[in-house]
Image (cartoon, rainbow, N blue to C red):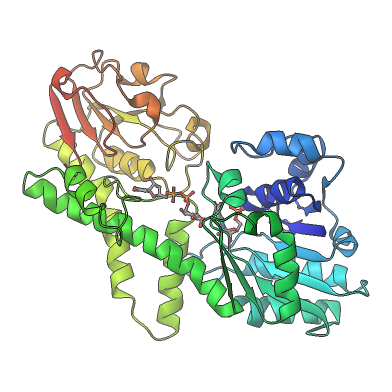
Length: 429
Ligand SMILES: NC(=O)c1ccc[n+]([C@@H]2O[C@H](COP(=O)([O-])OP(=O)(O)OC[C@H]3O[C@@H](n4cnc5c(N)ncnc54)[C@H](O)[C@@H]3O)[C@@H](O)[C@H]2O)c1
Ligand SMILES: O=c1ccn([C@@H]2O[C@H](COP(=O)(O)OP(=O)(O)O[C@H]3O[C@H](CO)[C@@H](O)[C@H](O)[C@H]3O)[C@@H](O)[C@H]2O)c(=O)[nH]1
């Protein structure tokens, strides 16, 4: 099938390379020329395991990129993989989606045969049909249901495992308003749907939109709940990891997403939970539980720095921050909890020296005044205290010998030889 993908970021590039891998002819439409050039040169514009090989294998044959929206006319289906950021008040900002839909609609004005537009971006219920649809109709001069069809197909891939998550998902969700759109999506995803492990959910557009938010709200809430239970466990002198491991044996709960500590960050959970809260309020519902989920998450970095302050006088102290990315395996620092830890430490007068195996250059522009180390041991050398903010595997079994005083507060439960330290504090254990 001939497919166009609008937006070639984490999602668009992964989906394009994977659909090419599944045998489709794919074109990425992207405004960033550098990304377009990289894809056409057979290189991956982002770091994701398995992505570079797939782009290299298909670029120039079944995968190409362009800045020109006209390319969509050679395709039957277009996926919108554009960013849906949050505004200052946390609500969903649809400006980029509207601009993309406008350009797409204009390009489709000169296309005669049927076209299916699939929203893959994370958008609140109603967006596909009440915002994207009308813009497409206006710009293309074609009506939905009469030459133009709409669908919503949320994406559940995680950063770091994007390719595997897309090709081997737990579930695929198709939100459609007509049988033909559903049949097209089934054909497009056929090899993925043939896997016994893939559940297919076919529903209407509004439900598909909400499934994505409910999914992320559930996972973020689960982590906030294990953090609250962890905070309580700590007050009782109990080990939350032992407690939650036992709790996770209950199949209704599952052992996954049970790691308590510094909390959740990244480009999705914070913005999606906030968009759902703002959307719910707009609908007249007060989402008290989700408000608390965010409040618990916001408090964890302060709790961690508070624990450190119990042992180190922070003003003028040299504090090593180990890990900057929002989770291991990525250089993404968007809404990383490590940044809140740094802000809290510097507000309390500490001199921060930070280390991360891959993410330093993404932090430096916004935090030019802190020190950066090129190895974990260098960050620790002479430090009065250290905090673990990201659970990078390379921090396991790290030697803290070079510290002025080995005071370590662990926000991620890494593997540390506690006996070799002067002070070891676990955030929730
Ligand atoms: N990153 C994830 O892990 C993930 C997972 C599931 C869902 N999502 C959702 O998918 C959507 C896209 O997220 P992302 O992480 O891929 O975003 P991103 O910021 O990585 O990529 C978006 C791309 O769109 C391009 N772009 C912006 N305006 C454009 C336009 N008018 N025309 C063409 N290209 C344009 C940008 O240059 C950028 O390369 C969001 O709604 C996000 O919430 C993201
Ligand atoms: O037990 C856990 C699991 C996760 N986290 C934290 O939660 C955040 C998010 O982790 P993860 O879900 O692995 O990362 P993302 O790549 O942001 O993926 C989420 O967000 C994507 C974008 O919407 C969705 O597609 C994915 O399904 C969803 O897992 C990170 O800060 C983790 O450190 C914990 O603190 N404890």
